[in-house]
Length: 105
Image (tube, rainbow, N blue to C red; front, side):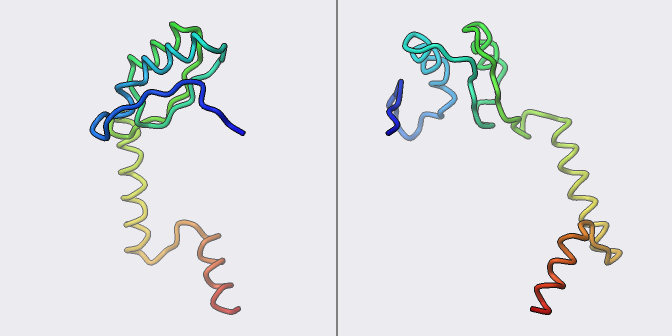
């Protein structure tokens, strides 16, 4: 059985990240923990810094909208896929072999 340690109720128009700091602070008062594990919606420096101030280690997915390097990497991958399609080559041979195997079965 899993029971929430802390809960904050808000309207549907309130983004989760806006209640992240109070949620982290209240939870820290109730239990000791080491990590703040969050998805890309919480990718903000203020959330990471607050986590560190509480003595935690923030583990936050990178939001591509906030990272120029990640945006460039995503664009490169898209460009490579398009280029491989144009020359009729498959970027991932495992996928191609799997599809061929499936056609035979």
